[in-house]
Length: 139
Image 1 (cartoon, one colour):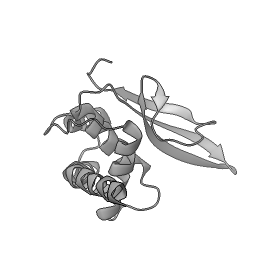
Image 2 (cartoon, one colour):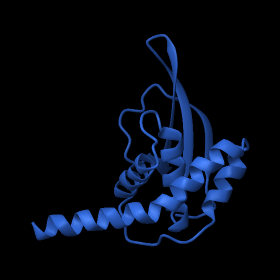
Image 3 (cartoon, helix red, strand yellow):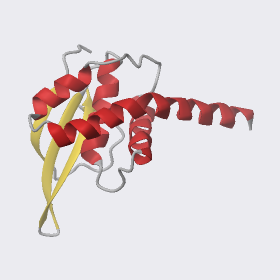
Image 4 (tube, helix red, strand yellow):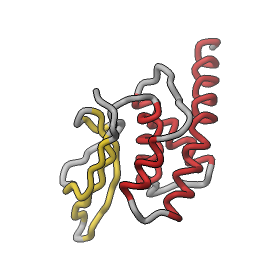
């Protein structure tokens, strides 16, 4: 019971740290059509250095966006928020977006990779990469 409470408190703290980043992502998406410039701008900001599993950080990014009202089909802001959080931790991260045909229609998706491995993603088969942006951090 106590361990579960500590984990929940840690998650709440993580969401509180991620909220300003998620807010900045939402605002930037409405203002800046230059995707590389937008992603570069998200790399800068207060450090969120903590020993955090990238999958947990992905959950935190989605939870922060949920608090801000982003619900379904929020993969772009979620990927950008995760990209920003990882970049600010000094981790190598890559923002990727792609499309696939699903039931005769185009389906777009955005995700983050670390060293070529998608973070907290399900099945990405069939997606054709359209855009890739690496941060300036080395592995």
